[in-house]
Image (cartoon, rainbow, N blue to C red):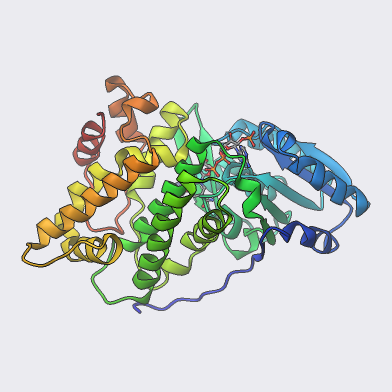
Length: 391
Ligand code: NZQ
Ligand code: ZN
């Protein structure tokens, strides 16, 4: 394991079909006023809203609702949430939904009492939360699986005016204090969202796996997570109510992005940077922005990290390496990934997401360039990835 690192994760997880029964005990740790954050109404249709209200009421909580958190939450919505949190002096923000609700809740938690403009401070200047800023604790009831937001400090906010979708990774003090993970809550997800989430998980693992050349335990864990995900995804696509598969996918999502597999590694994140830029132009579903560009990206950088791509092919996709060159093995691995992506029903090109030729230069400009992967991309290379992903 390279480098020096500190590992801790402060989020307490309650997992399983009975996990909601732990909410009461968690709520006892916080004051009377709970801000209930949710999205466009799925929790009202599937009954989760009623369950949460019943528990909050039985605990004697005052409920302040903040509904309508949209997928890819916006900065305008963030300002609105800050006002609600401040005016009601809330003691806990309870996010009931997917990554968008959870990310938004974390953003409100550090922004409600921030003395500066939170967009400028956290998302443009990437500053830490000031020591004298009150952070409102966040709890999470997860209903959509993919982002890992339930056990990390990530919070992605979209600013349509400045054409930027930016993630700030906050420290331990902003991670959700607790998360309730009931795999059955994900049964009502439309297939499109389920598979987008599955690819988001896969992408998080790949972003951390494709870097470095050392023998690293984090990579072995990553390979195990990918194998489990691929297996369970095929079962879940066939039968969305297969508890075993849905629970494995939920657990994999959390471990894919709760900082564990990044230990002792540099990380790539270029697929996400391109995906976020596509997101700000199209408002497309996050996981699909990743699936639509991944193959073009990995085929472009493959030669710079050929040994790892070989390992990926053999250890994750069971490619037989016998009598093949490294390039052939690597490409066979990517081909198997492509087959799997098509089989589970992912979006395979950006045209389908609403990207048109005239947007490409803007998307390139909006893409933040990172340098933790095998190749630091130039603007021309980002453009090539986009062009190769058009159909
Ligand atoms: O809004 P409602 O009506 O609840 O509907 C949602 C939404 O339309 C629906 N949904 C959620 N649970 C459901 C359900 N529908 C039926 N049954 C259920 N049980 O699903 C739709 C998508 O939800 P959303 O929360 O937007 O999806 P996701 O969890 O993928 O979150 C996406 C956001 O997270 C960010 C993304 O950029 C995007 O803004 N990310 C956050 C990360 C982090 N915190 O570390 C990392 C990720 O890479 C990602 O960038
Ligand atoms: Zn993601």
